Length: 442
Ligand code: TRP
Image (tube, rainbow, N blue to C red):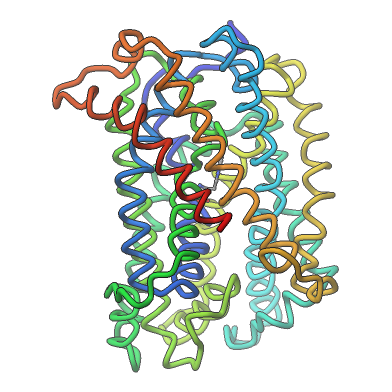
């Protein structure tokens, strides 16, 4: 068998790439970003970017992966015969590495919350979700470092044992269940005091709330949720069978991400007033508000526990793809090296993730550039490395690759989308990305 492990069917590919895309981005990051950058205005910009920039780029990454069919620090050379272009793959690899470094912080929080509910339940008192105090937990350096270590460890074990396939199968049940849970939370939130204000806040775009920064972060958010520009999606498509359906897969991933983002917004914002929070709470928003919403439900603690497990699952299907990219590149898809590379990669990630965890406790005062160390890591990845990687790939696809070959790999084209897509990638996308960079510099 070739070392480039394949899925036998297109379904495996869809489940894996949807798993990679749907994670903390839509559920945790979207609401807190929207809270800071103008609610409905942010949602509006996010939708525009996701549909008109994210979707074409996702289709592009899938097409490149399918054409190149190898790991991403090699694929650019394979496709263009220009070795130096592999730098785009390395850029993606670096991005994913830093990304895992701060992603694991939030994964760690989920684990600590799960632990908290379990410990409370074991103490045989009735579980009170009000006792889960975000500030107390997050300001405890040891606890958070351990939580994050456990998250990285879980990711590593899954990748080492190669049980991703099992996880993908499980996601057929877990993902719909997550949807159901989000809907339950939304339903509860909508009954709380001040819900109407919250709905208005997140759904109504107000022109005054649009800021240059908000535009930038909205683009970053679409890149983040769709895992774009890191070559992560190229990697998955490169494993997929030739008959995979690029456009419908990309389309369903985009739709799911948008739906989950909106549901997460509708779960959180309507509840803010009741509990005395502001939209600008930052990264802790979801963790502060949701326990309180669940606390208002019958059997809230049990529901919350299940929700946390589903949330953890969604985060893990993303984090395994982060590690998987490193493993794929550093082992050059040689299966005998997988385990070693997974361990070494995880250790490195753990080391760089410590400062990002501590930006909520001991290193809270260290502020520069985009904010704390955590904020800076996120900024470098979402607003610089990901757009840069996407720009590189659009230039390769638009300027260097053969159009006929692209068309072949684009697959069946019932709706005659190839040409509009191709010209969008060739002429429009690079300009949009460069413009956003220029705005950022000014
Ligand atoms: N999209 C993932 C999420 O929303 C995070 C992510 C960003 C990612 N870039 C990636 C995952 C690259 C895998 C590969 O949670």
